[in-house]
Image (cartoon, rainbow, N blue to C red; front, side, top):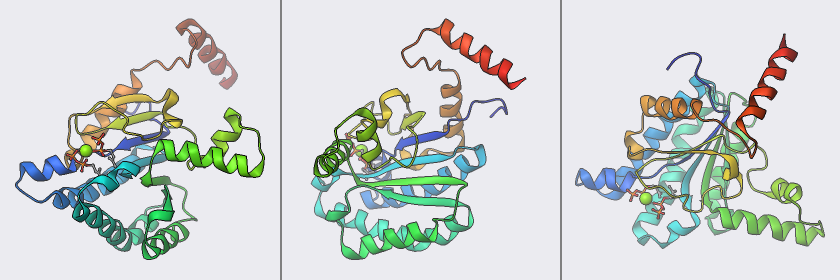
Length: 245
Ligand code: IPE
Ligand code: IPE
Ligand code: MG
């Protein structure tokens, strides 16, 4: 990757394709999810090295409960074991972990593990890693609206945004989905309003450093207009440059 590449501050990823990766190798789907954890470790390291500040990954959706029971329980066990084995290294690498999603459906043991991992990494600031587990964009908007109603706070864009589960970070700049599908599948519905979308045919276990660099390079070629027109962006870039001189 060239040094001048524009690095997104916040990358969100729908880590899709674990099951197909396993099926192609005549392995059980859970083997694909295990390989997916390795791919996530590689991606976290690569993002930190490239100066990304925030990585938000979709690990289990509100809808994934509908999968066969053995896959669901395998994913719960994998979350617990990955926390147990990976937190010390993440802690050393300067990663701050947040688990984002509805905890009320998770077992007490799993919830305790999430809380412990968050506390153990709370002092870190090199990279924020949001693991979205039992998360859904619709759940998030509904729980935020409910919280505001309960408190008697009027619903505005600002108050609702501040009540969302990802209010501790700015919106994602780059939204990546692996696995070849081109849909959001109920990931960051509110926060992705102005994210640049990038779809990769790589299955998540094979998404590596060069795949990440391709996504970042594609992002660097986009013009983010946020509703304005190109000439306005050039004027504001020029005035920013002159203020920096
Ligand atoms: C994404 O991979 C991981 C989870 C949803 C937990 P999939 O399990 O959806 O993989 P495919 O799409 O079946 O290949
Ligand atoms: C989205 O992938 C959820 C996660 C990656 C955790 P899915 O595989 O569940 O999405 P659909 O069902 O293909 O839309
Ligand atoms: Mg899938």
